[in-house]
Image 1 (cartoon, helix red, strand yellow):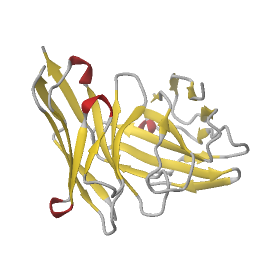
Image 2 (cartoon, each protein chain N blue to C red):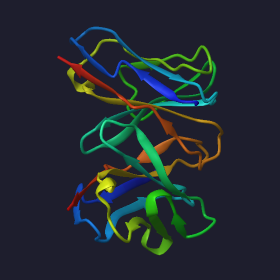
Image 3 (cartoon, one colour):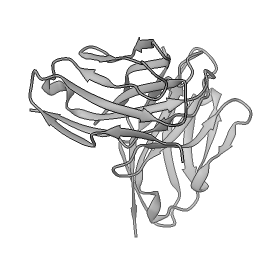
Image 4 (cartoon, each protein chain N blue to C red):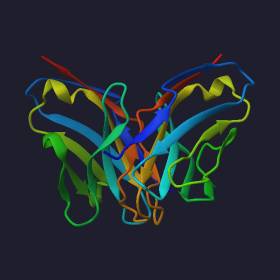
Length: 114
Length: 114
């Protein structure tokens, strides 16, 4: 069965600092991986997705993630945090051959300090 | 603009009552999903539908039901509400069956069962 683990339920960074949110997955087949962001009182929005075309995936708002098969990881990074990045971030994996069915991690809340 | 709307935004009910949460999308998407969001669990799939008259159980379907009579709507019914069903509920939709399909989320319904 596929699963996703996000390391750290809360991450706090200073404005301008590197953002690193960790995600490890378990899958018996080549995975399709996603990062979603949830701003307060809103639904989730897609940040980026990995679909095997390239291991380094660029998303919206300056975020990117690198797929590392050897480490079963798909960590999310942003070189310089902005106050508007404060939100909850979810890593997710798509169940094989099940379009749109996602298994989500527990979520990581990102705080950005001025 | 196409969108996905959920109603009500907030609902308080009593244990044992039947409750229905509405989800309406104007994307003309075939696929619709209901997730619940709980602290420490991320989002978990309740039910999903790949088209009219099609419904399927997700990971946490006990105590919930859905019906799909048209493309636009997938109402979620709690047959006899329990305190364990206090949660934030998200509806989502997607177009195709590809494993890397992007989900579009509604803004959520906060349900409290007292």
